[in-house]
Amino acid sequence: MKSFTATALAALLAQQAAAHSTFQQLWVDGTDFGSQCARLPQSNSPITNYNSNDMRCNIIGTRPQVKCPVRAGGTVTVEMHAQNGDRSCSQEAIGGAHHGPVSVYLTKVSDALTADGSTGWFKIFDDGWRKNPSGRVGDDDFWGTKDLNACCGKMNVKIPSDIPSGDYLLRAEAIALHAAGGAGGAQPYMTCYQITVSGGGSASPPTVSIPGHFKASDPGVQVNIHGAMTNYVIPGPSVYAGGSTKVAGSACSGCEATCAVGSSPTTSLTPPVSTSTPAPGNGGGGSPGGCTVQKYGQCGGQGYTGCTTCAAGSTCNTTNQWYHQCV
Image: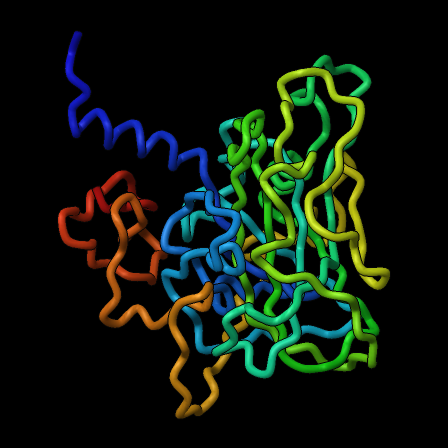
């Protein structure tokens, strides 16, 4: 039997990574802010330790020094793609039959530039599952991630009109369930965006801690989607009353349908003058300067602005123009 060489392993990992994805861009009421306020992950791989602080905002490759302005009661549109900087609609936003729900959370923070996500989170959006009467198994049903694919990676999310003004981290999460038949097989993908909300109210939504918003044994986390399904429970808490939901399988609407890259200039943000130093770790990320990328993490590619130095024992390998990986 032929040996499984390092080259073959790298090729396999690259193939797997191609089916992985990250939330990258943000539109605010139809205005394209690109990735300016996104804490882009080091790689497009999922977080597999559900008890890790990385469940908050992923393993950060770069943390921006700007915040996107958002109006209470307005609509943001999160955007997901397989590779950082690639906003093409010719490829699925999250491929490889990575079917599952999409949820969005907020946490109120004193400063979105430095917050580590340890404050309480509340859910403001869900797009989960709906039975396909023409299907046989869960793979055939309607899912939030299928809606992302149908809408070129975009998902509209209403910002509750009654939440207080101020800084927040907005956390978009997709959970791929293709391997969720066993404990720990579900694959969460998440990105945090730094936003400042204006025109808000005085509501105080109930919150949950992340990690801890779901467990590996929850019915919506450990589930076999390759058999017939009669119901599905979206992981995490219920959507806050001021939030919104999307019916899985419904048509693209608003910015999901009309916002196209290049249709209007990307709005540029100016970093504030600050003497504070971001605190690394605990999902908060850190400055790319002096950082290293762990083995199998992203180390380069077109549009990538994170760490480029691989940890000892690995080198940065060019997988394609969008994705360079430490192997």
